[in-house]
Amino acid sequence: MSLTSTIPHDQFSDAKPSDALARAFLRTLAQEERKSIKLNREFGSDPDYDEGSDDPIELILAQTEGERKTEHVPIPADLAAVAVLVARAIAAEDGLVRRLRREAPVVVITTHLPDLVEPVRDVLERCAFRPGVRVIDLSGNRAVALKPTQAGLLVRDGSLKEHRPDAGNLMVASALHARVPIVGCAPDPTRQLPRDLLRAAEHRIALPGLDQSALDLVIEAVTGGCPTRRIDPDLARTLDIADLPIAFRGAASPDACIDALARVMAAKADYLQTGPALEELDGYGAAKDWGLALAVDLQAYRLGRLAWADIDNRGLLLSGPPGVGKTSFARALAKSARVPLVATSVAEWNASDYLSGTLQAIRRVFAQARTQAPCILFIDELDGISDRARIRGEYVQYWTQVVNLFLELLAGVEERPGVVVVAASNHPQNIDPAVKRAGRLDREIAIERPDTASLVKIFRHHLGAGVLAGDSLMP
Image (spheres, rainbow, N blue to C red):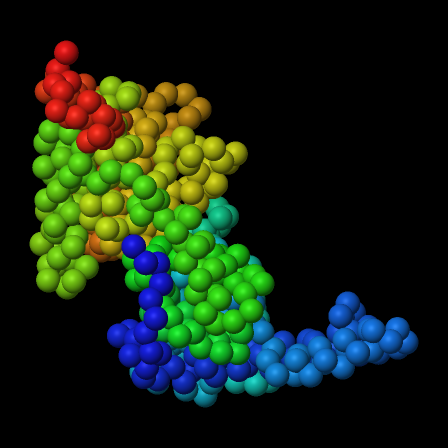
């Protein structure tokens, strides 16, 4: 499969006719980059610039590089991507950009991913408010007296115990009294921002996903030109903003950025790696029937022919002894459905040193799945989620919070459209019964060790058609 294709830029199906606000944000960031470069040169902190050097070769290089530097000032790729997404989210809300600069709106922004909170803060501080407005951090719990020439910004990534709805409401009340723009930002505002900020919010917006036209803007901001090729849409949906600096490092041209991005994405897209699709595998019984039906539904969902609410197979618990291929099933299912596979495990969640880290890991993987939807979210070792009825002693509070958060995210099936949860367990009897209630993982399929007929097909698959061709593998 080709990872890129050459298409005239004006024929991109998802190209947006107007990204005026996004381009304005990028120009603002570029101007600040130019100022930073100028200051570095004036104070001698630019390693590539030595005004006093008398080395003849360095003088030649300084002249040629100086000419090149004035042509285009690159913006960091990840910051440019966040700027585009923030601008698009604001522009999609009628009149919001004007209100942020002329009035006193209360805005809540959903980032989905904790890693985007700080870059969004950076973009908002630089671009969202009118020049001369000082942005005040409202993250503390004490009341802040804001002035008319200021704006309030409250960001929470969910990593601290005070990042909850009942914390910070006094500070919010004080800020609301000042009648200045106030923006709250979090991966999951309902669970992480002050309750009164959500009640006062006049605008609730969410960062969109990266698409080809957004990538075009980012590449233009980095290189100064637009690519003539596009990345495969299936790979583009698995793109994380953190991939951009890795892919674009050293890329000398817009098309080189596309090529580098395709290489980076192909390396991380497990669902496109070599390996069998579900149609090629045997020994899965009812699980295979369930998976093939889901693959058809997800294809229809991707094309807009089937609503998320009309898909029945949105959650599955795979059980069975070790070695029967539960993880292989998830990979094969994702390949058949041509969607990303987001793989995690309860052991991975519990690798954090503190409860806050475990809760953050759970939120992060669900957020990652939402950004890559439609996708398969595979959770291994689910029996590591303890049954609350069996917990005793000092771990009761710890596991109660872990189980409650997991159940909350699992039950919000309508809040994560396109995310199919497949979990695996060697000991399903140890799982909290609430996990298996209606609307969660209410479908359980046991994968047994393959019988003789299935083993023959499994051996044939691994041997290939050319080995012992025509011979019976039954003996």
